[in-house]
Image (cartoon, rainbow, N blue to C red):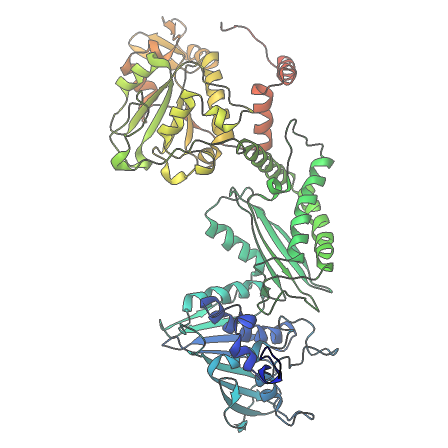
Length: 638
């Protein structure tokens, strides 16, 4: 005997399914809710394998009324029930009581594509169930065998003739293994519905006896329909209405769909042989690489370069929502839970298929492509700015909405965001007229001092060091940068109300640049407007006409009678208008003109702000010279 007390008698050999019951986490990831439901997925995956290989068309899942048991039925070939020549047991008993047994190891064509190549799924579920019942219909008969905690509870029974074919597995998780054995209906339904998109031709139903509801989960629209669902559920607006779709049916099947959104995250769902791979893997790496390379190739082909800006792979993939479904003959999964694919060849295979297809799609849909590239440029600028520290601006609730707001803000009484308006006005003079002429129930006024800071190309932290911009963000209430929350918006309309002259246009442009660079979500959501105040007052007897600009003034004068006497006066600024005139012409919703700010092309907007407000004066000079050829200047407003 060894002096350490450690000898041959201390060595244990776990036989049959004992290793599974001893170390369940090795096979299902754990005994928590995730591991509990993984038992369902293992049996469903086996049924899906029958569908993938052309032997089944439908799968039904039924949850017991108490949530303690579940039945999975398919109309496939049915598990073989004849005796195995070597082991002297029925194939059914062998498969359900022995690890690494099944028809997925050989070189034959029983399973061309399969998610269950380890041969342990069904036996593991049996081992961790206090009761399992297998019902088989094949070769003109129906067979049944019951199991308890992984061991056969009697021999296989021949119940009688049957014209049907398929396999039905019923099991109840073992309370000795799982702290909680109640299966969740919503978790099962959500998982099955995801699978039904991946397998567009599969009829899949779920009967929830807990609620008494039966759900038809079939989705013949496939993964393009799945993508629409994911984008809709993300509550993020798509950058383009047109998604990219790819499908290769011959050889090794491969499908992919992709759409950019205004989210700051990337969301890719990948599947191998219908099995969700939440940990990604080599196939997903190829998909991501294909996206980045296709975009870079498109930008290079069309000579799209942005001076002073480095676009990273993260910028390109920001906001994407994608679904990738691959089918592999010999998938190498990481672990029995199949969270990740490890086949090294899949990265190049997926990339070489999707990259040229995506690049062709971009070239064929240039409007959509330019919108995507514009969105990527904005992401790069935002990422560059976020490297600076950001002062977080928190949303103020209705009860504390007046706390820490700018002192010069004349707030409104209403706290109903859909009904309220914030007017941004130039200087105290215009601010005074606007405050007197507004409807203080739902209209707020924030005067801005002179020309605000030009924030183009400026880090956010530096821009917010400017008091005017800081006050603006504080009044709006959404926060900014990583702290942005559209739910904190305090006003349904943010209205730029500036003088109808060159200075007013300049201030409006500076404000629009700030919104475009740092608060683009407000523009996309349709909350930013420009007011159009009159530049001229034309009195004709007792009638008064208001002209927005020189052209409008000439149109009004031409419409007057030939001998009409009129008087034209020009406003030097909104501060010259008395409160009633400003209210009647510009503040009152019944008579005013508002222009909603929209982004037609992110790329064009980006170029315009860089040319007009960027640090390179050469770009401004070129812009002015180009426009000078097309513009005749009759009056210089100084």
